[in-house]
Image (cartoon, rainbow, N blue to C red):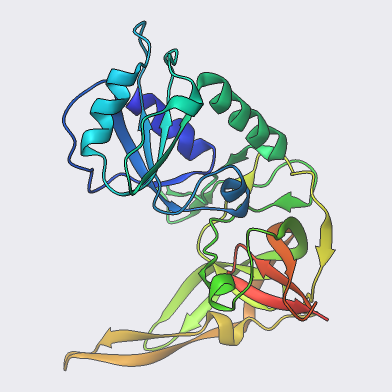
Length: 298
């Protein structure tokens, strides 16, 4: 069941590290992965960073106290979640315990409830900007990842460490959507040689270069909020970069300048996932999940 459960968990937005499997003897219960990033919504569902995810697999034999006690013998310290697709013969109040090991068990019904809540929030789909080169031509054929009416909702795999480092409570924050502009910018970089480039740039509380675009399959039903959108943005400084260039005497660090006058810009209206909360002084703060930047709403 592990190979079937893993892609489903990832589809639900649960970020898992599947390396460094705990040393545990073979049995009914198998290890799936370790949560490496958790969202506030997942926190409220009982998930946590570093939590080990386990599965009973599918089968006719129920999950009884003997199977759980055998699993607990080798269980490492920390938080654990066992997703059971078998019938559970033990009342939740009578689960065996072992000091230093906090675990919870989700039945098929519990897991189905979690999936239902994720669907109601808007099941996301990842779409990459794929470029295909025709072997018979120098022309690049680009997949159009935007279709249907705008605004399009971008998905973000957020790192909330900045929020925690500023002493803010991410668990009590609320998810929102920020109105923004997304640009596909094509142009020329000039350095030791000339190069055609293409970049995604987000205009939302500043200009940010985005490496990958992911879209929600349908917009979540969340409150929409505005923050600063720069009018007539200048892409020169953002898209210029320093690179090593080999000129025969070793690699030298040289500037490659983006030429604004060569820019070809396609603009999209988008919404960006974010969280809003307040600090101890009563000031509202907004965390942009995509750019991982913190803004104070004055």
